[in-house]
Image (cartoon, rainbow, N blue to C red; front, top):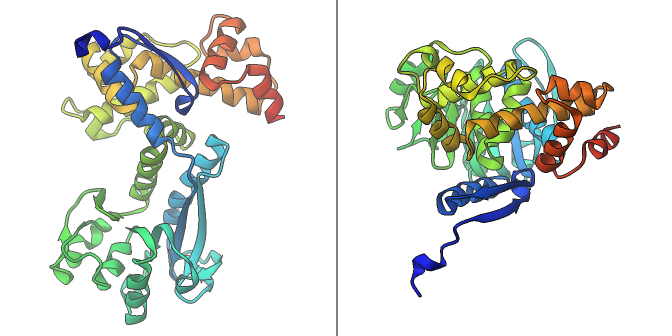
Length: 352
């Protein structure tokens, strides 16, 4: 018997890792691989994060690091991330605007974990002391990944942890950073990953970096929900609006268009036209990013809006169906059960 005769022509899988979606595949090999990649990413492991603060840290940077993690926990309805606020010596640390944060432990007393976010922001040169460098070198043995946020790369470089590595920093300090640490491969990217060292150059890029981690750990749909919660990507950037804009950028534009047109859904060809892609290119870009095409993506966005309304409002299922772009309540409840694995009524009862 030949191997080709063993290949299934049609496979039906029930996949809990993708919200229990039941998918019928005509081309099983490529699409099953895409789905299994998403299941692998949808890990239930709780990841631990130490957030190392220094005097005059940026409130904005801290919020952009922590709030996406908090949102991921809330949206996933389980604790995907645990974090603790740390400092070199413990005690209270004040932000650049005077906000006091009571850190839970000193860095040396923290047992380590998956990530250490290093966040000095202002007065970073004053923090680049021998004590700090020794503490960071010791921490590098206890944390799987070190992350330089805002001006954090300066302290990592001072400790010798970026020698021979690619890294970025706040763009105001790119030239001094490169001149002070010639052994570091300094690049102007918004975020940089070099094996177990991550870096980003400011408060907005901090959000992008953490959002990227959420997508890496738990799949692009959770990343989409988190970005939607903070209205990230709702307005096209100048780069994305150009004809030469990247396909990932155009997919972000498309999801923003979908979120703004939930009650009266647009056709997929119309969305493709608005973002400047052919139907074929749009389908491929969505599949490459999310593991399924734009119609399935649009449905997932609409159903997550229905879930939000079910959990946080008391309006009727008929009105929720109307607001979610469904013709009637029956159509919504069938799609809802298939998407989330529980009935609309059970979801609403649990939230109450």
